[in-house]
Image 1: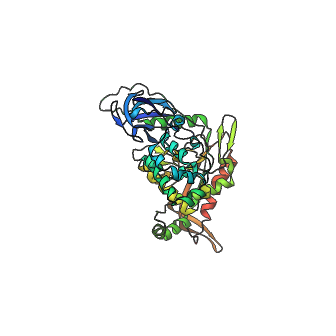
Image 2: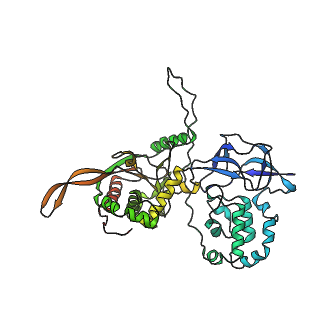
Image 3: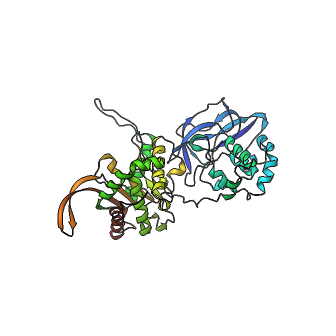
Length: 441
């Protein structure tokens, strides 16, 4: 028997630490390779940590609620058969029985695949065992990132990568593997805030109840206070006539769902307009780091989503300006559904450059949202209401019933002045009011 060090794996470019929330195994329990040993929570989402080897959990070094740094040893596993994999690099030197059986296929595959890449460059989590198999088999990073795993939250398991190799050996994936390309460059966030230490429970009288904030509520509390202390918040408001959008959606929503298999809400329509406006006003698609302004290349829209427990999370639609309305609707629905089900991955909440929040969902006409650091702006969508309005025609003005809403734009006055902040939200309104009722989706 020999000891294997179970370490906290890399979970994303901007994730440096995690909190242990639950040990799924206790000392003395048997652990299979790729089986989850404990559950962790980052400042983004929750996940689990699998074992790269089979053996017995012999020692745990941290308790529930302890904060652990990426790369830090969190437990020891007594391996079976005296095989030790101390580090990912050392692990690659050991032969894997499944891989040996595919040696002949690997030789042919390597002839058409580039030299294995540094898998640590990926923001996705792969266990050392999976990465070692990929290296041995000549599977590129682009191929690995294209796989949808069967593990928790879509994590690629040992069986997934071995099955992929077998399929590639049989020629089923040869065309795909040759066409895969690297993903876009990472955009690490610079904001990493820890919540304030909880004070002693207060004393109360009578039937009052004391409820301690849960972990996510503490994080949100810390983020909000820090954002107000960091950014000079200022707001601009504008009323928008969205009658054409309401009529168009009512007309096409049934056919849209039948053809695309997705519900068509107002959110993707608004996101489309925001992405266009950010291309027109890139001065809002920035972040601040000390005395420096960082201009973001990609437009990644954060979408504030309420969770069933009342907490808030902000999944991100990557490269939103490159999506058509169908693609935007699919992205909005996918992220929203997985947020409610608690199935978001760390990557899903990273890299946002501007945020949109729909306060109208709860009936609010407008709001003054707090900026999601280190971004410099956030747009609140108010409720759509039927209101009497003056309508101008060549024959004169008259009063009619229109569908209207307010857009509330909060922005950081340190780097965004009123002219830019106001012009941006006006451009969003112009795109919405100019919506083509005859367009296809």
